[in-house]
Amino acid sequence: MAYPYPRISYGDKNGNGSKRTLVYLTDKGIQGTYGGKLVENITQAAQRDLLTDAMHRLEGSVYEIVLHVYDELLCEVSMGEGDLDEFTEIVRWCPEWAEGIPINAESWEGQRYVKG
Image (cartoon, rainbow, N blue to C red; front, side, top):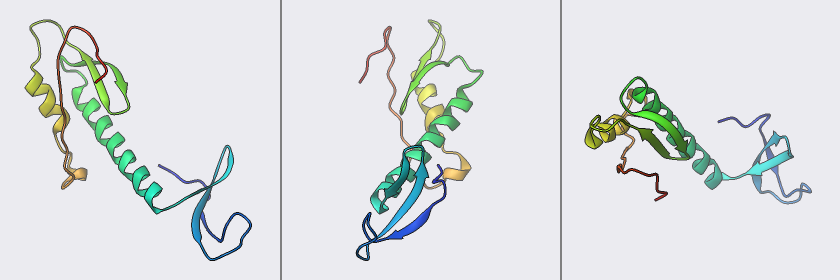
């Protein structure tokens, strides 16, 4: 997560008032954000890192990742291989850098992908 060329801006878009806003540069120009949005960005960035970490743990296992969408992983497993509980535990495992963060995962298995 990065905020290119961040700075604190005081006032509204015209510089009036005393409201403080974090502004940064994007391909759409200068954008502003606020505390709640920053917390949301940090939370989503940590979630993405946890998902990526789980994807690395699944590499080379019977759980072949064929798709991931936002916070979901879709794995293809040969009939008779793998175990839903084992898969869930691999995904739930908490890396050392995330100690103290509550991590949970729900899993299901089926013949076809179904958006939950």
